[in-house]
Length: 157
Image 1 (cartoon, rainbow, N blue to C red):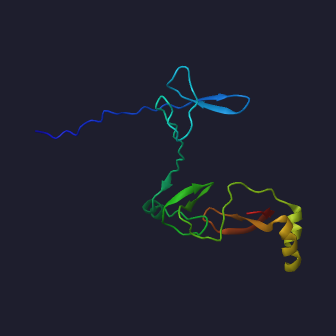
Image 2: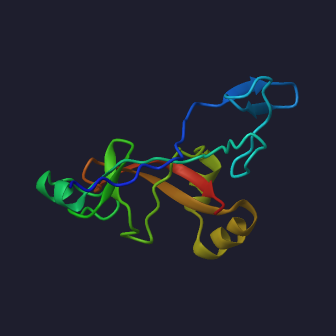
């Protein structure tokens, strides 16, 4: 006699929620009930519906990155699990703690460029009020700096 695993009596169905714009904001309503009602993430409503919010990111395995010789933008090493970042790839794990890749280019400032050239004592005094002045450098596909300075900005982080 063949073994057949017992089928579950409970099944789930998934539909995208109904989104309604109001003057106060956006409401997320249940897609199954008529009349609809508001559903909240992580809270089970009276009809049994829960709203699940997930973030999904695809990544390359260490075997795939080593074979394709893909370089990390931060540390310039190949291998290890990597995710896409703009026009290149970076390791999932923190590979070089001192390097930060910004998601958006910060507003560049001429004043920041002038302050960057100040002597150290005067510069640290000014940076207490404005935030640290950083230099924005261009990097190539392999994560190596090209030497081209795109500008200067104030970093408050």
